[in-house]
Image 1: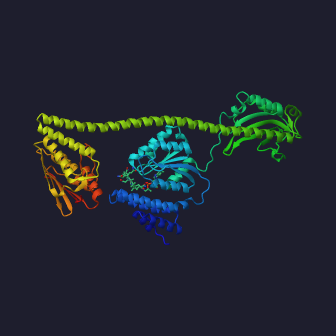
Image 2: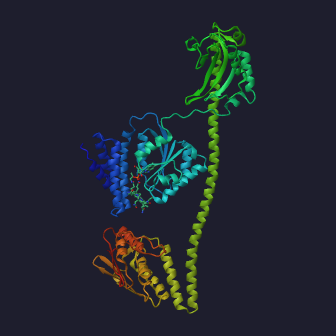
Image 3: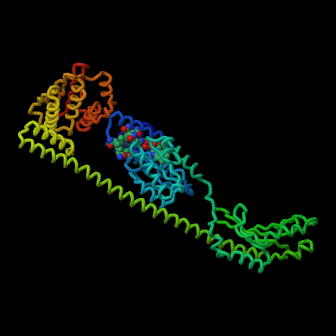
Length: 605
Ligand code: B12
């Protein structure tokens, strides 16, 4: 099995899924790293395909086929990337935002994350903000990765971040965004925590952001101690403990700050005062034999013993229970001190440590329950907020639907009204008004209701006639027209609305700026299997640089809502879509003399 990167790239470019999978197998057998197969194989192939798409050499269907080939290759790659996995370093939710179905980059990111030890939940494509929020609440990930490839869907990323904010979950998850229409500045503006230009950089960024490898911080629920001892009874417990053992009890947080009243614990300083000038030395308690559980036992230079029992769980230490002070049997200590503090045997010390172990265990269990309750309470609160928001959004959607309905009503209404006006005009003997209004109504109906992909040339020509009739009536001295289309081409099928935009171009940009006006001739004939259409005007013509821009397909709209070079480009693209390379659009123009647009396409019925 010999492997070459070129073969893999070619298989992907050709959209040959079987071959792509085979080439990946060969690459893996040859020891090529999965990451290299992705970057030098898939991404390189996609670069070529992307450029061809942008040059209009290939179409959307070709892209879909290419994407399938990559997905097939990725399937082969996945088990290798996941080999040798241990504990997940974090949990990631990934998805392509609403309105966007590009998923190749997002899938690559998912695989790289999994390969780096992340647990990945993939929500797929066209994911609504509310779906992202629900998933975050359900899975509680460390990071939410949003992908978008269209400039128009970028805003759905900001909407998703806002939805998280509204649900009260923004602070609990890192949001990382990516895709070609983004950069760091845009990402920061929309409120993301990070942006990465590619999947490899993204993995490192995400690890840094979530501090992968660092342990979660242990926390003590503020209400734990109150609940454990009951409000106000903490001091009773401290007193009872002192009565039982003669020792004082105090709880401190991880930084050593007292969480309960210090009570008799401070008396230690009075005892130490008693010891001033004492000849005793520091002693090491760790050498004592006994079962002291997890306790830390300190003995000061004067022999005073203090016990510290940790409040800890698997995430770390949240504080300690301190207990003291006493002397140990047999230790040398001044007589005043022996009278002031209890003297315990090693067995007594073991019993105290057992009691502290029980107390600490109970506190930590209660702490865990309280923390879970607190989180559930937070989730409940944010879910209620989320439901309210959902309700508002549904309301907004209903309003929007109503608006859409209204906007459909008005063209219907206008169309019917125009027909009524036309009839009235006829009754009143205004024949030209009647003709003009009917032409306008037909034009409206054609452009508003025409949903068919293709129409007959006869329908297109009728629309052109209506349009020209209206313009000639509006500007009788400045617009003249002639339509000379031969009978044998009228049944030919063409994409809808290819001729009218070109004729409108001729009127608006050719004749309108010319003071004395001019003439437009639309002609059509059949030459063998081809149909030739010519739209000729004797207007002001097109300047050479504008003509070049049209050929480079770079022309933008005039911004006046009227067709321009953009119309020509659009017509050409639709002809290409229908007839492939079997069609042509030519523009010849002489400034000051006029313009001629020629369309050639196959005669199909
Ligand atoms: C393949 C493709 C398609 C395929 C998608 C197939 C699929 N399953 O994904 C299909 C045919 C469906 C398609 C459709 C369309 N497409 Co398209 N498509 C492309 C194309 C050629 C390649 C995109 C791609 O996969 N690149 C390869 C991957 C590996 O790169 P990537 O996606 O950028 O991902 C990397 C990084 O961006 C990053 N990344 C990606 N996501 C994330 C997320 C996070 C969190 C992070 C950190 C990083 C990260 O890491 C990835 C890996 O390194 C691009 C052109 C191009 N050259 O990019 C146009 C392009 C994106 N498409 C475009 C358009 C306009 C469309 C359509 C509107 C076309 C149409 N007329 O219908 C539709 C839109 C459909 C929709 N609603 O989404 C435009 C977008 C223009 C714009 N700026 O808005 C482009 C740029 C082409 C162009 N120049 O006109 N398209």
